[in-house]
Amino acid sequence: MKRTVIVVLTVVALAIGTWIGWPREGGPAADPTAEVNPGAAAPGSQDDFDNPVGTSDDADDAVATDEVDGDPGAGDPAVEVTAEPEFDETAPTEPVEATWDETVRQAARDAAVATVSAFAATDQAEDAWWDGLKPLLTPQAQPVYQDVDPRLVPVTDVTGDPEVTDETSTLLAEVAVPTDVGPYTVLLTRADGAAPWLAEQIRPPEGS
Image (cartoon, rainbow, N blue to C red; front, side, top):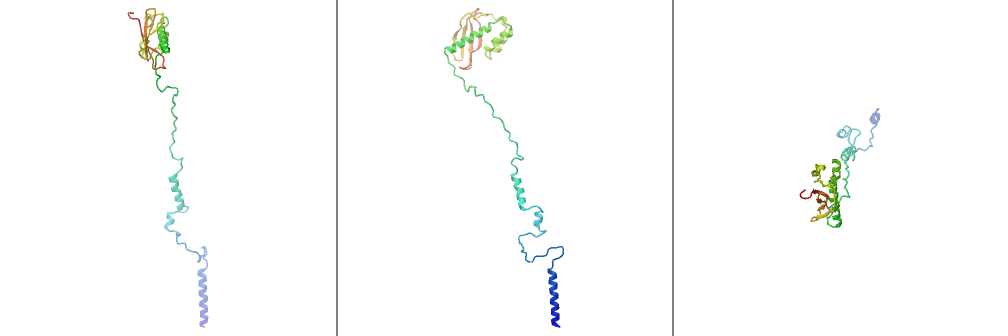
């Protein structure tokens, strides 16, 4: 009798154990041999809130890197490119030294004769008379002679060869020009040795 009871209890215990280990419907069977990862976060833990579904620490690092590095061309201000200024390479860097020689003296004589001849061309209209005289005068002398009435100019012709009467300065010269009313004296000036002679004054004969 006792043996029968023991057998029945053993069968019941085995049945209960089998029922406990049997897989539940709708859920996976527990694997008693699976290793537990102590570093893995359990579902519903704080890590799930810190790293939502679809993100990871690596993704956060990538986003941070993009924010720091960024696109080299995005957001940068446009670089303004300006052209280099152009320089006139033909312009002299310093004045040419002025000296006296026969070529310079002849240039002064020619400039004086041209000035007196243009000044004496009183048979022209006033505009034409001024157009002939203006290029032979310095910028300082032009306003002085612009208002001259050519009808009041007494000289009408150059009658002899000019003569340089003063060459003390290499930038100034006085030239006497014979005319039909007496010798006119022309004061000439130049900027440097390469510049042309221009008339600063046209002086009539003394006493005229």
